[in-house]
Image 1 (cartoon, rainbow, N blue to C red):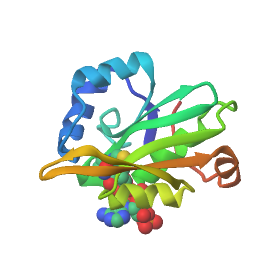
Image 2 (cartoon, helix red, strand yellow):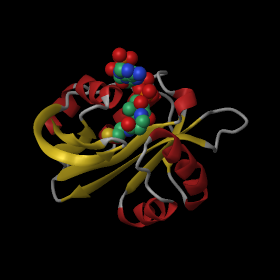
Image 3 (cartoon, rainbow, N blue to C red):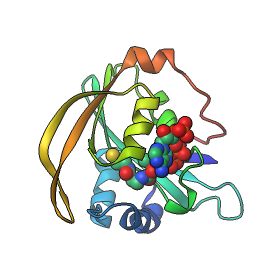
Image 4 (cartoon, protein in one colour):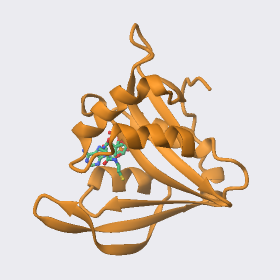
Length: 162
Ligand SMILES: CC(C)(COP(=O)(O)OP(=O)(O)OC[C@H]1O[C@@H](n2cnc3c(N)ncnc32)[C@H](O)[C@@H]1OP(=O)(O)O)[C@@H](O)C(=O)NCCC(=O)NCCS
């Protein structure tokens, strides 16, 4: 697999994946704006279509904290460690000044919560009824990861391109 910065040419494919993985998808405009405001990575298959993203991760940094705003893998490729590779790559690429990584996740999103636990994130709080669902609202779990845990748990992110 290949991990590289997201570009404007990736937006259509990324937005198409987004619609498949969440009931409340970001718009193409939000991804476009993220290219200007945040750090955006894509993971691509390394074959004839190697430039076509099959997953993405968006995070932002403020002073000494980072926040993961979005991460997803195309449903056709989930369960093959690509989300892990992408998350690990993003964590390893954080500037040295970053001391903690934050995120919010739906309380029902077991695959994502499990992925984050694997990387040392811990639950630090909840926001009641934070997310819309088909049937009403659900809580957000707030999770954080300390820099020391990132540094202690370095994992080879595989073959990547900067
Ligand atoms: C969360 C997501 C990015 C994980 O990507 P992935 O490539 O499928 O994940 P991986 O194959 O690297 O698996 C990593 C861990 O996630 C967990 N996981 C993955 N799929 C799972 C599933 N169907 N059920 C439960 N846990 C699961 C496991 O803990 C797994 O580690 P393990 O294999 O050592 O047990 C992916 O499921 C996804 O895109 N979901 C939709 C978008 C989303 O919810 N994003 C997060 C928003 S906060």
